Image (cartoon, rainbow over all chains, first blue to last red; front, side, top):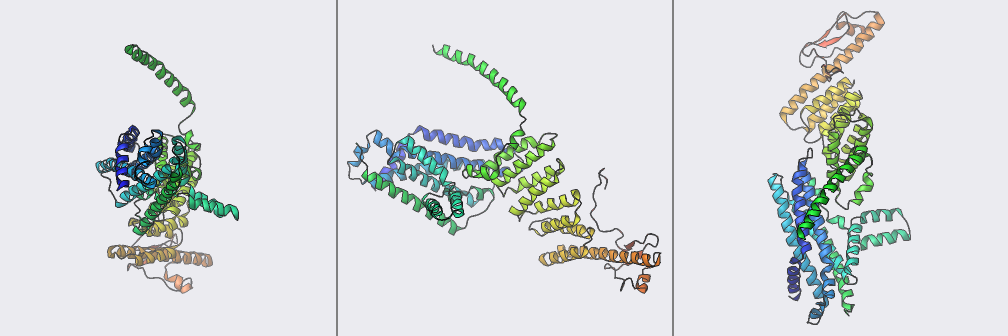
Length: 253
Length: 290
């Protein structure tokens, strides 16, 4: 209950963030611009609409997750509003969870608006809409939840700027971990164990990327989808637990 | 104060536009747009750098490429760069079947670079075995441009067996096999297709084509016997029965449509009474005549 009220409060607070609206407007503009670019291409113009649309939904959601996410805790500390919360009978992990779900609700609402924009473009151009499109968007939300958890974890121990840099770095690395594994397999001994250890420790964000499936109309079987969702949830839970442990020991003086 | 500020800004805008135009003329004049294609990094390196947005990357490169393909005339180097760009695009998105197809057509028909076209199409065929038009184009390149009928027939045969391939492909493949001197292969191919195809109308057409290929096979057999006859006796036989009595053939085959085989005693050519035209692919010669 406490978590929910913190979450709703965080959501209301996020709605006052100008950055959010800037990103949302840019996303909608990008999705709309695909209509112009479509005229320049040859052949499969459906794919251009889907690629630009999904790409925009993805990148702008991730940017919201990172740049709103890093401020979740550090803003409270900077404005000293954290004192009023920790002095109440609210456990610190509840505070973190509330912040996390608050931003998740924000992301969800934003993604619904962006998806509505994308669907409007698709319907206007009579592009067939398949179930895999919604699966892909669902997994983008999951990716953003993991990224939010990373941002939240970083912001429990460092400043907003450094958190942004760390989270961006994790986002980049998260899309390259498959290569990390490949390098590891080519090595032997210690190098191999270190790289494989890093591979399992870092999030593999490519697992949440179904954009290509939408473009090529390849559906994802349900059991695979369940595994991906379970992986995302487990990873976010792991990060939130880590964040709670650090946040519990943090001194706000 | 306010008005002065706005006025200064507007006045400043004029030199900005002027300078920008000057720069555009200087720099863009030196560098033709197509050069940018040659400088693209290899797809293997570009793909990880795009962080999961490689399909979008392929789209944007495709858009760029289309702007230069539209030029009226491209030089020889430019086709190599186009090939490079297509290679990068299809490495970013190996399932982008349309770009292989267009690339294959442009490189062959405009650039006369069958080598590049084939290597692009082979990559496409490897990555997209369910697309019939890629092996079809490969077959076309091998047959018409490289003059390699057996290889052409092989690819058209692959295309014909792909799901969703148009009905005319089996016919084309068998013509190519026959012309390549492989009527037996053509027959085997037809039989396999016949077995795979449950559609009765299609089966009927395949049966007719099989008979035509049998005619081609018989004519080849008879003509080589005629040549053998001529080399031993110094003249052409007067009728086909002579081949039988001389032992050049064990029997005169029956014409599958119920007609008969006829011998031209002047040229030594054999023809069928029901199908006087030989089975081959009709191609346009250099001047475009059929």
